[in-house]
Length: 270
Image (cartoon, rainbow, N blue to C red; front, side, top):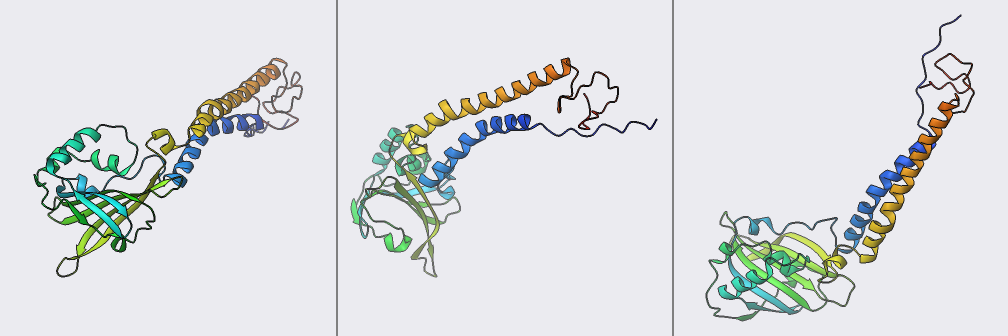
């Protein structure tokens, strides 16, 4: 009598693979949908990129403007040290809405304001930066201009401006300018990121409330429960076939079989 061949590797049943796939989809798919939605509307996946590192890492602010007006005729109002400190104390601990005010004030520290003037000698000035930054600005503007010196002593200018055109999403442009040329008078952009936000409601910025409701209340429980039900059904089927002395794969009657291999389908027996 020839020796019995070793048991073959058992392929995963279709129900088992389907249950695992649905369970994984219930966990991964909500994050993918939210990330895709944020990428299309707010232009980032889950969290926006950090504010200009050269400013937050020990930058010393010497000038801070409030920008308003329309493209090509921007108006800049210089803030005094007292106004900056009062604004920072008000906005630094508010909820993050990803607007330019939140990005600026929530990433600064009070010791960065020591070089600001106590009084503004020229409170209002005309600031034209559209041609320098090549920003696609069309509507009313609102934002900040920050003149600072990096920890290495290099002069920089940071522009954070929102384009309040009547659109669904308000674009937020963040541009870092650095002086170039032999006389260091020609300022050129060295970093430019564009974000977007819908309103000062964080739920509307990160995703539509309807989408989050769909993900958390419908999609995730449905996928998890469906996958768990399929796996439970597979376990019950295996238990019933094992108790009836049948192959768990092809239901062949194994009551008279002593081989570790199913003579019908060739799968190893557990």
